[in-house]
Image 1 (cartoon, rainbow, N blue to C red):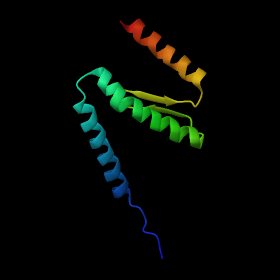
Image 2: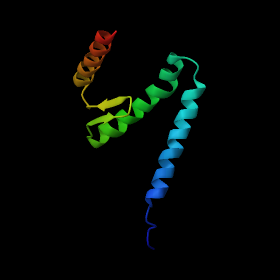
Image 3: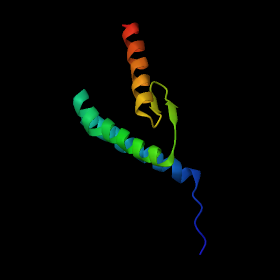
Image 4: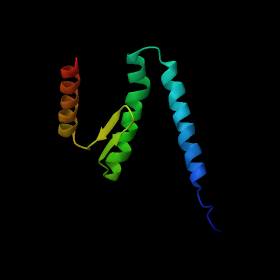
Length: 91
């Protein structure tokens, strides 16, 4: 039996559906703590588990955000400190 080829359109609609689901969950949270605890931390944990298992290193640049996965706790702390220092200097 031949496998059905996945279309780019299907992939795009899957990505859009995920974005809409995340948006709804984020929008439902009324505080930064709720957003962090109930959406961001679980998303980051999933990213860490998948990327760590696959040996990925990621530096994702969004239009107004960045997501970094190094797979190394010391690197994560160093990058966090760099960003915190940068944001503090901007104030």
